Picture 1 (cartoon, one colour):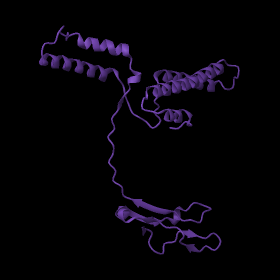
Picture 2 (tube, one colour):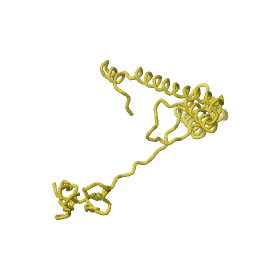
Picture 3 (cartoon, one colour):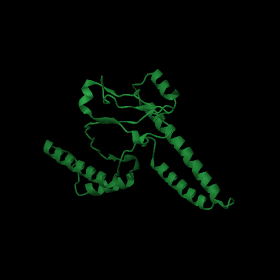
Picture 4 (cartoon, helix red, strand yellow):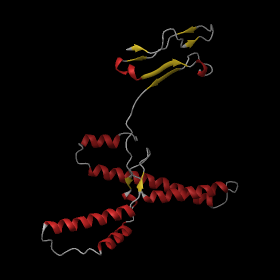
Length: 214
């Protein structure tokens, strides 16, 4: 390890005596020394009621930015609409009753794949994966959240009138939304545990009994 702060740079001013000392420092391994662009102190940025002087350390890191690919939101698809549009695309290309050779098979396959891809591009939404994306979220929760927020705004505007029925309507919508979230979570993770065949009994027990996390 090597010391980054230049020799003699103070890092603390005693409250009582106003003497400058150097109890703090920054050390870096030899392999990272070339990455250090600057290491110094910032006396002017010291917060009030503190004696330690902030240390400013700039390190150069060249990170490759990950390419973002939007995810297909299959859970939000209207399958009746999807099926109708797919059938319309396939109507001009009737399939033969029997495929007699490889060339004919490839032609039918290409037509089918093209129709499915075009229908997917038209009917399936793309959405960005955000840090708070939940596996158990569904379209029904979207509608109930929207309703609860709308009623919440109305209830707030009528806050001076405690007898307005909007308050009770909002309470019921909010409770329904909360209970729907609990049911969605339970159903999602129950299905997940039922489909995981590689987990042992002890691993499954650990998943069930552990406290909730991200």
